[in-house]
Structure formats: structure tokens, C-alpha cells
Image 1: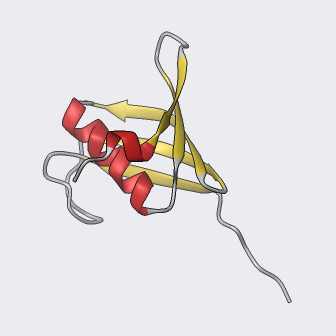
Image 2: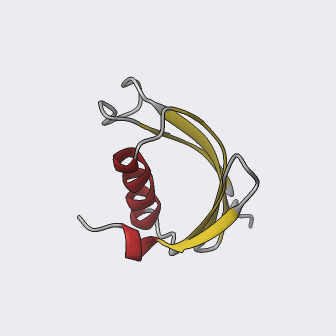
Length: 86
């Protein structure tokens, strides 16, 4: 018997993004370790609304904490539930 635990994904988000194939403003690599995700290499036009959408998507996927590294090298960790108010 065998099982695969997927640990990497590509996240796409944007003002007009609703499903795969739609145009998007930001893409990022997401590394998952249990209920934590590290968001790496985000590229594109990030806004507060798009960032919040990405955080809520992580929460809906079972991610409770996420870490992000900013362009200037500063890293921060958030509790996804604190930032996702839908």
C-alpha cells in the first residue's frame, strides 16, 4: 500500500479569477507542511483584496498558518483565520 501527500501547489488569484483558465493578477508557489503553508515567489500585481483572497483560499484548504517572505527579505507568519472574514 502507498499514499502520496502532495506538498506543493501553484496559487493563482486576481480581480477576475474564479476558476482555472481565468485571467489572474498574481501567481505564487505554495509549499504545504500539514496545516502550514509557505508562500514563495509571488509574482504579479498584488492588492490587499487579492492578498485576502489568497489567505481565504489557504484557510479553505485547511491551512491554519502561512508564512510569506517580502521582497526586502522580511518574513512573517499569519494565522489565516485572523485575516479571512467572509
